[in-house]
Each structure stands twice: as C-alpha cells, then as structure tokens.
Length: 272
Image 1 (cartoon, rainbow, N blue to C red):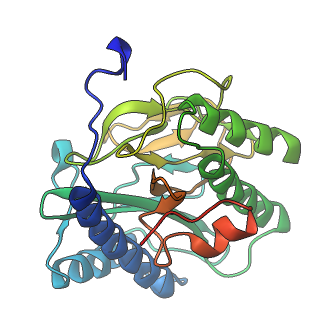
Image 2: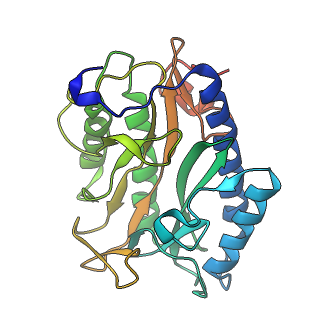
Image 3: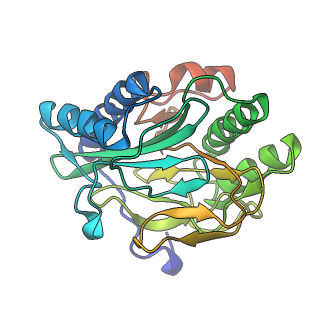
C-alpha cells in the first residue's frame, strides 16, 4: 500500500469470517426476495420479507437508515438504475427489478444485488441482464494478488463492449467494504488496467456493474435517492462482495463462495 491507498481497510482472517457470515445472510435474503417476485407484489412487501429474514438470522439490515434511506433493500424497477425506495409500487408482468441488499454481522458488512424478471420479458432485456451478470463475474475473475483495482473494471468494460451497444453507468461504481458498507477504494466498471491500489490479501471489494439499453446519463429524482436513466432506457445491476486469499478468490456473498462459477472461469477458489 502506498500514500494513495490511505483509508483502505485491510481485514484480518477472523474479520473476513464475520463478513462471510454477513454475506451468507445477504444472499439468503436476496434468494428469498427473488422467490417472491411476481406480478402484483409491492416493492414494500419485498422489503418486509428481506428485513424479516435478516433480523431472524441475528443480523442487521445495513441499508435501513443509511444516510436516511428508509428501506432494507433498494428496489429499482425498469429504468431505475439504483437506489429505488421500496413502497406501494406493484410489480407488473414484463417488468424487471434490481434488488440491492446488505446485512451486518458483528459490525461487518455484506452487500450484493441481483436483477429479476417479473414473468416473461423480451429477449433483448434478458440478454442485457445476462451480460451484466456475466460482466460482474468477469471483473471478479480478473482480480489477482499483486494486480490493481482497475483490472476489474477493465475486464467488465471489455466484456460488455464485446456484447453490444450497452451503456455502462459511470456515476455509480463498486467499492471497498468491511466495517462500513462503503469504503475506499472505488471500483469503476470501466477504464484502463494496471492502475489504482494494489490487490492484496485482506482487501474486500464489492463489484457492481450497472448497464443500460441506452444512455449512461442518469438523474436523481426529488426523493434524493432514486436514480433513473434520462432517456427511459431499462437497466440491470448485479453485485457481489469478494476477497482474495493465497489460494484464490472467495466470493463472500455466494452460498458456495463462488466456487462453481469460478471453476467455470478457470479461477482458483480461495474460500474455506
């Protein structure tokens, strides 16, 4: 670590174990919410499902109350990119919804996101979702001990650009995570490789590409949270929290630690 890396939190193994626990709770909550996504359900009902599960596991929702955010999850429908506030909006057949969720265990955070189709949606929307999710994994797979943070974003951007004319949102990026939900360093989803802080053991990052079918330009609504595309184009958002060990990569917010997907990508698994 150098002078430009000040403020980056390096975790001890026992602290990462707590983050793993938080990551499992986060993933369980996301899976449960996914199972309840259907036409007619409200985003507020999904929020209640997530909060009930997180608290039942002895964890605390890390979004609720964060700078005044009122929900346990962010529920971003169609052209809403991120930070959608859960409430009385009913999902309709043909919508998509991005769900961002996090939990705290013993002061340590987990953070992950998925995008879910509400019944059948057009093939081009499914393709956008698939590209976004795969780009997240390609970013994680690009991380190596001794590499640099921008290796992740370069891999995400390269994959997305090869798959179509999607917009890669630049105003909202991944981040460090640990004893706080958002920490240095930022993890952009674009850019040149070989720059930024070095990737070392004990560094934990949340990787979260957001792509659109159109513009990268966004605006924040008067609620001061909800972010939508300015051209009304739909967007997708996926996120996982991961760390690097001497053995390989460990995705803290996947129930299997990311082992299956990492194996498909030829990446050594570093979890326990």
